[in-house]
Image 1 (cartoon, rainbow, N blue to C red):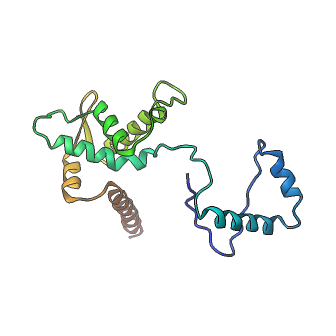
Image 2: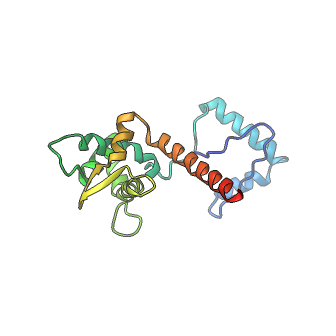
Image 3: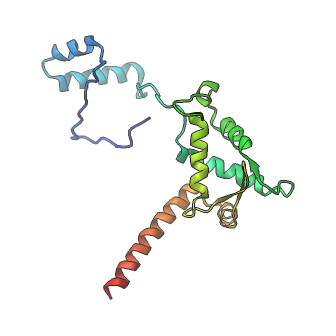
Length: 187
């Protein structure tokens, strides 16, 4: 997972050597006259050899539930528009759609860190929970294991507003409400 922080010239970067660090790395660090300059030279050599690629292993290849929301919403909205599907989209169809769209491996889909559900299923369910919440009200559960878009969800989908865009609009509206409430209490 990439860092969201963008580093600029002049920034200070610090790092910790984990307890399981290869002892050779520790010896290398202790053998340097200036660890800062040595690391910059090492980075420069790595860039010359392989370009600007990320060297960290992707420890969590599955997208977060927030990153799945748009695909899940699109799946439910398209399925809900079909008049032959009065109950909307079945949960198993959502899993299949998201799996096909995002391409996780069977191993990633079936990883069960703790509990009874896989990490993949857990993230899909969290995305559903978020979209079903009163704050969002994009989808509703028509019956157990089935989801369809709400009236508000239909409006959002037909308007072409992305869920990410909706999140920003809702955050701005929340801030606006706070400002209005503060102004009214100050009167």
